[in-house]
View 1 (tube, one colour):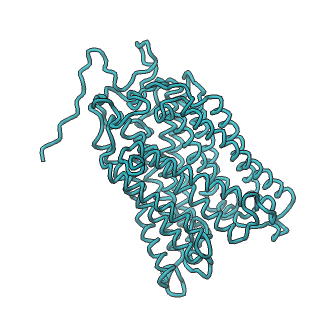
View 2 (cartoon, helix red, strand yellow):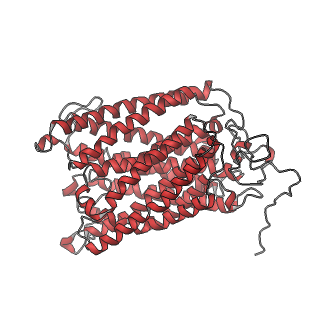
View 3 (cartoon, one colour):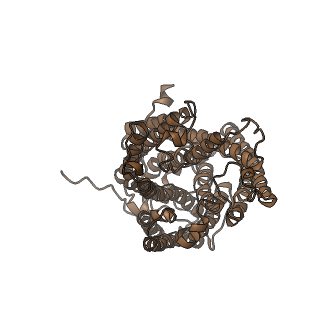
Length: 562
């Protein structure tokens, strides 16, 4: 048992992060089911829950958002795929700091326990929204969850510590543990994107940690950092939160982008278009993400002249993302496209994310945002941004690397049934919510029966339609889990390289043993990761470790003397 619980093997830690993240995802999805049922049929008993009180509704909405961002998107996309891909794609036997890697997961797991425990204390889980704006979050007589709100902050703080530890490992391993001959610009996109995301997280999280410490002090020892009555300022929290919060979008976005960019060349059998351009635009996106936070505060009373500046920076950040999108289109153009399950997820990631990006332009413009702020337009935009990242990105990566993780192929028919039902229901849930937002429907209302002017039959019909779609989508996840378990034991044996891909993880056994390559026969690298359909070769792919005839072997340069 200690082999699995206390292992320092990066692959075991990958599974630990993935399983914990998916378990938390099920909890978060169940919360969404409960509060959507309350919105669609207010006052009725919700199956498997019962009556939903206003306090429970607030706690469910708050923790659904918190869990899906911090306990699903981050652990799966960054920690799980980072642990799986970085050593294998670099030709290394493990992370540079394996014990710190294990400690990172243990702290993360503790954070999940603390968050779940917050529902079991007096007053229940925190219900002040996932943004935790003071004074609602700072004073127990406002949020009515004195222990729940403090545990929520502690859980988020522990989760941040875990990802700081993990980020150090990812960056250091990419810098120091590459195979001989593997240059920086030979690294696959997913490795680059996780490294950039880790640096972005480390650069942005500090102010929020300081703000969280002040928030705990306000909650527990009576300080007033955010209380105007004692000289504090609640808007200070908004600045600290969103200075981290908007870069956080790109922290989880970039690994999902990297996953899709590794899948698309494999199944279009074409070289990735604009490798270096994509890298530079990813870095530009990360830098620009530090200059857009205040567009979340257009209604908090900031100077309109400042609002104009943040409108420009917000729209500006769409430029590098548009460049990435055109690079994807160019990588597909003229290719021999294979619509496998991973490819469907990778393509849908860009299709759905484009909708999130276009609708974000409205929210980045201060004049429009004042109307849309906190209504269902924001909610729909947010889910068209985060669902492709957290859910579609996860399914794309999981189905692509499943053969390497478990040594067997997933069932394609079940995979495509799961894809089409999930993607159809997802759009049925969230696209109609744009219309609720255009109609001015506020997103934080527990029951629209309390506001007869908003509870019009046509709007209520949209809520019922979206909730029904959600239930079907949740049921469809049973197909995925069945496919996962069935394929692990009964799937077709995968072999080393079932996709005929180029990157180094496909040169070792499936699944890889301890140390990743047998007898220490680590690969050398001779070229970039996306050499598909090269001229003059019989095969339409050219693995990174395959030396060209007569080519001089690249060797890892010796370390400089101290």
